[in-house]
Length: 159
Length: 195
Image (tube, rainbow over the protein chains, first blue to last red):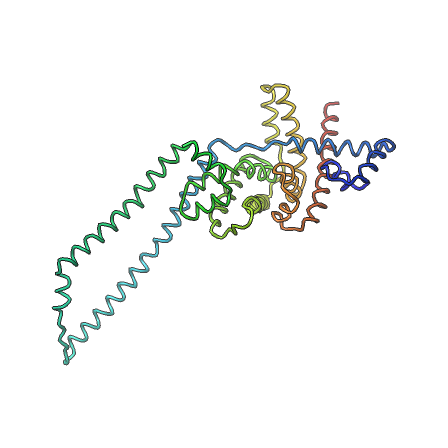
């Protein structure tokens, strides 16, 4: 009898022919009986093997780690700010140079800023801009303070 | 409220993942609570100590959480996740080159006097099984652990370990045979030391 067939018997998936052969061997072969007993005992111990329990604070520790990792990711993302700042500064510098050179050149160009100033001084434009800024500010407060606060409360409440 | 809770408990892993991906942070905790014991047990059987097993299983969860956006939602979460646990434990063992030590066994022995006779028997059995498992390869231990603890099918174990189901069957048979031999050897030595 092959080892695989013995384990098939123990797992309850052996064919009828294998089971009959096994029963005959149990009656006639002392060495087989001893081997089967050995495998059966190990199998029984493994079946009874308990699931190990983690430490009580396992999930809390994991969540702390996860939140910390998220913050680090966020910081890494925001660390691109200096790069954007440099790009912005570069654009401003180039534009300034262009303006300076154009002013210093003999052929100056007259620019009519009145339409732009009219738009900027428009009451509807200012109100719209203020509304958008308020909404952005509220969204920021909600994301940074209110949402984390209520999520935390919800977690504690659900425990 | 009760209805809400009962609906939540019926949720599948993939539904929780779906919630996480749509921004529900509470799903992470639910996934962890659902699978921590099995992840810890698989890790413990491979690395051999509770402290290391906790580190490995926490690391596996972190890896899984990070990789959730790339998880194929048609697949079974546990198969995917146990593969991560298995690899994390294997990496840890290789990195630290852990030699099986009897620290946990001696700790269990120190606790023994406070146990009832049933607890003592269970602890003894755990002790010998763990001691024997420590002598097997990580592959063997994983297959035995998954097969017996979580009652995973051969196909699922094959996906976790990354080999064919036929090979798993052969390896599982060899692993159990080796374990039986180790148990016999350990118990033989114990009897000798008693004499």
